[in-house]
Length: 126
Image: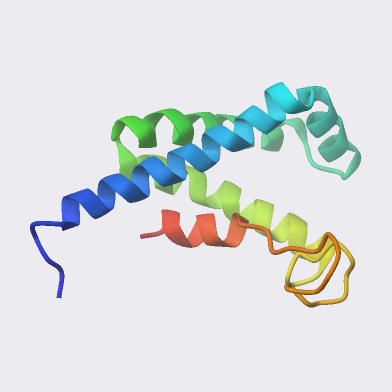
């Protein structure tokens, strides 16, 4: 059963957390590495430019509008296809668990890890 007193705070915490993750992703694309590295890498992978523009617009919309709580459901619906596409992109290239080494173990030694894209997509659908 949902506690009606604390439900708004849980939604606020979820919104701010997801917006923070999108802000961190944008920070990585624009500050830590040049955007051209990301853009050109995906162009070489065969994605059209409109997909890349959509991905950036979805990240910006999620970072700003989810943080402010403006049109949260519409922003989530707008961003969800991008997150599913990002999940598919990594699943095709790095196996189901998105492991760097391709050994299929998420907790193995080395630089292997699970991508948070699936988790973001699941949280956005809530």
